[in-house]
Image (cartoon, rainbow, N blue to C red; front, side, top):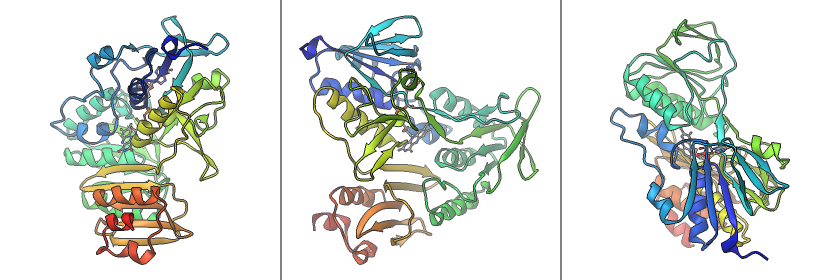
Length: 409
Ligand SMILES: Cc1cc2nc3c(=O)[nH]c(=O)nc-3n(C[C@H](O)[C@H](O)[C@H](O)COP(=O)(O)OP(=O)(O)OC[C@H]3O[C@@H](n4cnc5c(N)ncnc54)[C@H](O)[C@@H]3O)c2cc1C
């Protein structure tokens, strides 16, 4: 058998997951060749600031996760600004857009996700933006500096973070949400209503049950016509209607794909030499009895680390309590777990006052928690859930009982 030092691991996708994966490979002691291929021209960077602090007027430069010297010191080959266009599994090689063919022993796909575009008249006009990359962020930040009206299409996490940033920058903001409540895919109605009130109180015009019919303009976006027939004059439009996993490479190579690249608990795809992690991967969750694809910072980091370790021979199943956050105006929202229906709930604190935690229980266990402005408590809640502890509903509701004590109990 070939020694590991003679092997080549290729990582396709130089985003957050790809960056963490190559770091973990070297930390694990892998001494072979590592190649990181990225379609973007940038060193790996984390995306959460793009819809938050990097939309502020005095936003500094985006920091990449690691400097170029960091890669050189670890002998990691970077191929940036070039996409991988095929995985030739029979030859065990990756084909790049510049024609290069690179043989691999093991391959990791961290290709992330791409924004969904609107399929309506005017969607391609200049002034209509989506937000995924640093270039998108720069364009939207420039739009906000004009302090003119903007429309945000989509009342999900990204749309609402952008709306809050625009409002704080002095733009008049209208949010159009097709559904009857905000962030409805992930959150219960009670929390949606709290955020509708938050945005309303800060001057955002939130219109529910309302989509965009068309965008009008000759040279650039000038007005949005809603499905309710209203016409809103705008300087720009930001579309935040969700993302789709980038699975085209995997699919063309014949890997199993279903709402993401299908992987097992070890992050291994239907080809034992190919792994996947991050937004692009749909992982088998034994506790849930189904596959789950997450779009979150924590998952991009830790699933990629787990995949990298398994490529190096660790053979360890990856399982952790899902965790996500969003910042909108002065509210920090955090969510743990994979809750379903929010039927059996317990509240600590005062959610309407944006200072509390809503728990969902199932059979006495916490399966989900949403914290508003409780970042410290949520760290412990996540650990309580991971440890499988079962505090009583009365204990969970009682603000006088510290979560640290519940964890120790
Ligand atoms: C604006 C924004 C705000 C966010 N805020 C939060 C937040 O507050 N909290 C939270 O938990 N999560 C947040 N997220 C989600 C989080 O950033 C993502 O889950 C994370 O970036 C996923 O990492 P990834 O490496 O899987 O994918 P990505 O970061 O998308 O990286 C994938 C990379 O692969 C490249 N690629 C794709 N195909 C190829 C190919 N064929 N060849 C070469 N390269 C390729 C892409 O160009 C991209 O650079 C946010 C995301 C965005 C966009």
